[in-house]
Amino acid sequence: SDRRPLARRMSADDGAPYKACRTAASQGRRPPPAPAAAEEPSWHADPRPKLLIVDLDQTLWPFDAALPRFGLPHRAVAGATPSVQCCGALAVPFPEAVAVVREVSAGWRVGVASANARRNVCCSLLSELGLVVAGTRSKGIEQELMEIYSGSKAAHLQRLARTSGIPHSETLFFDDLRSNIATARRLGVAAHQVSPLQGLTRAAFAAGLAAWREQRLAKSAMATWMRTGKLLKPGPPGVAADSAAAASAAGCEQADGDLARASDGPASAGGQTVLEIVDEDPAPGGEPATIIELSGED
Image 1: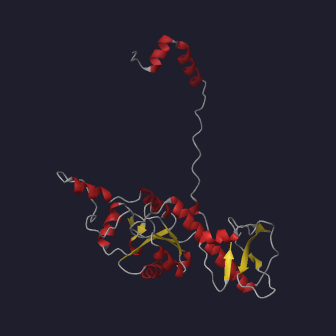
Image 2: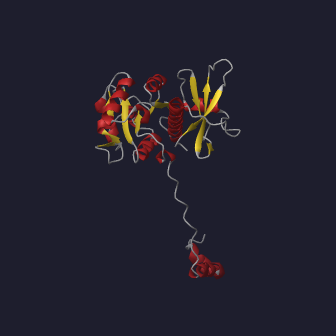
Image 3: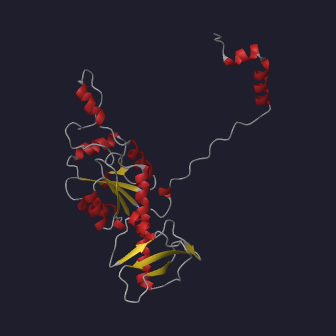
């Protein structure tokens, strides 16, 4: 077979195609435009929480760092048995979870709430991943916001709120255990459960952020209604469509018999965001729902 370079073969065997290529280049034809830069992730757009808190085991990595076989960061050892090498290979985080934490920390403060009893092991693993930073000006998990010890997640979250100075309402929390999610929500923290097999994925993060935004909108709407009692006439058809499904997806909780429900992408009326506040137990003859005005939240 002919092993000459393609350009040389084209020039010698059939000069026309090669000359045509050179002619096109000499005429100053520009190469195809570079692809447009990716849009800024939605989690850097306002409104957004001020503090992200993540669990570690089955959230940031798929193992329990308290188990002896994981210990400190593993590296290949000459002459080690296959079983040792196998255990070492297991100490690998969820790549997507690590990427999410790094990207989010560019605009958020990030902390850890873990009930793992081996703080030194967890800190070593986090440092090995390059996720631990000192102060708030670097990207990563702040050393001062690492609550890693046995006990209830309520203690972790309350201490993180005191240390950071950020209230629960401005916090978003991810964990793989339903009980920890329930604990966080009782404190007023927006929380989202991740799959222990996948950890903190981009999809899970987006779902958690959407829940936080819906919860914030619902609480603000309820506060406005309770404070001013200002009402609007019902908006155009479709404003409150599928509101129950949206509220359920957002994890909104029932309070005092009232449930604030928001549609996906709240509608606007005259520059005002319109929500539906549904009274689950209206007075006899009363209206089952009231459309209220949420000032300044369009």
